[in-house]
Amino acid sequence: MTPRTSLQQVTVDLRLLSSLDRAARDRVGSALGELDYPVAGAPTGATLLDSHLRRAPDRAWALFRGGEPAGVFAVVPYLELPGTQQTSTYLAHSARGTGLNTAVKRAAILAARAGSLPLYASVHHTNTRSLAATRRLFVSIEPVMVVEHTAGRLAWRCELSDPWAQLTDGPVHQDLVQQFGAAFRRPALQAA
Image (cartoon, rainbow, N blue to C red; front, side, top):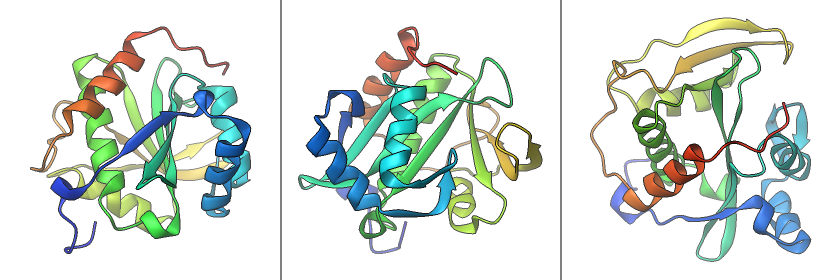
């Protein structure tokens, strides 16, 4: 988040990916374009959406701001630690630095903690921007470098649901917390 952006000003329109028609999904995929850090082996926004729809159809959302696609957020099975979930956020270049990631991830962390859902962030070891964004959410958090065998990569792992990892002060978007909490309480539909 840049100093010019207050979280109070961040408005998020979250839409379940599976509820979007093909044209709307294509718009989101196009807004993401080529991924600068492939996520889940997906080199483009379109393939990332397909991956999220396969792995977490009931926990994958398109992010819109002002009616325009701004990114995608999902909570998918973390294959490195069975029984756990991991966040996946990817923003269009125009949405980076706007506070959108902070608002969405803060709400997901609070919902996960309230529902005792083990939630992690896994960041490619060279993705300093994403690692810094995760660290800014917390007063203090110590990412651990791990080898992820299923993804075949080195990654920084952060346990987001750890109650000892204190979140920084900031506004909480209760509507997002409630939306994520409802999704986390339902049995997941994903296929690992």
